[in-house]
Length: 119
Image (tube, rainbow, N blue to C red; front, side, top):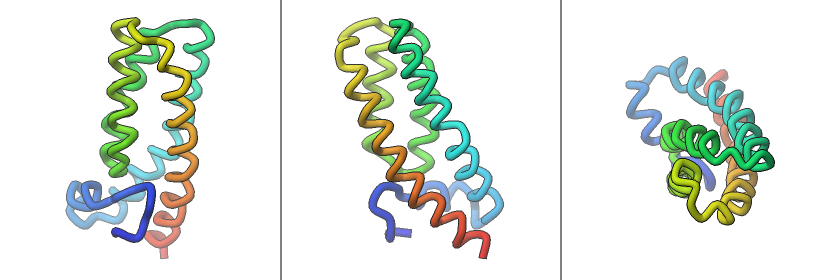
């Protein structure tokens, strides 16, 4: 599992107790919902709705931890803190940009993993 640069599925493998179906379901769910969550935060940024950004970031922390994306877990924590407390909101655009890039890189690897799981 250490063959990827942007994801580390060791935790997900441990959690799955060897169930390929479980791993597939979690990865597919991540691929489906994460872009929607990022878009929701970007829309909320335009509206300066910090609470929504903080709430969505809170939910994303767990998803990123399942995918072994520790850097994005940290970004999510900062976004959550900035959003829920409406402090240092000037950091939010750059953090969201980091998230967009990290997701795009991870998605390629996750789709590769899905193909391997399905074979």
